[in-house]
Amino acid sequence: QVQLVESGGGLVQAGGSLRLSCAASGRTFSGYAMGWFRQAPGKEREFVGCIKWSSGRTYYANSVKGRFTISRDNVKNTVYLQMNSLKPEDTAVYYCAADQRSGILYSAKWYEYDYWGQGTQVTVDS
Image (cartoon, rainbow, N blue to C red; front, side, top):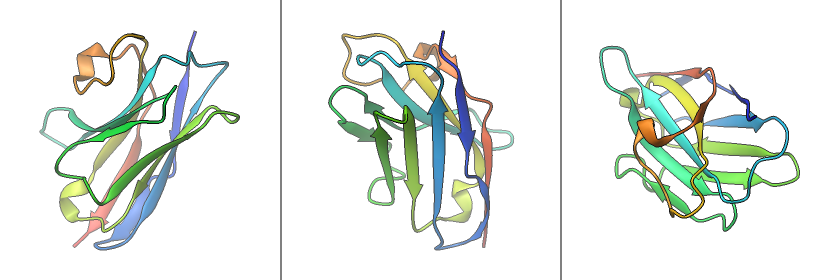
């Protein structure tokens, strides 16, 4: 009942910025956690951060704290990932995901998420 579509990826130089968008179709349950994950070639899927839809509280992986910011727009049913001070190691396909469990505060495990977008490529030149 939920479809997610990412956009905003592209090629940037190190130190630059990108803003990714995740548009959710229909209405998203207020209890959902919306997560961002990334996967580089040959590596496992990695947690980037998430936001609790109801409260707006955010959680981030240590590797992106202070550089990435997650926000959401309730009217547009859209979640954003603002990425600043990008590094070559940030290069990956970025995915938006939704965890429908209402009772938890956050989830950093990819297999706990129920819905996924198609991904958007982010490439950072050194």
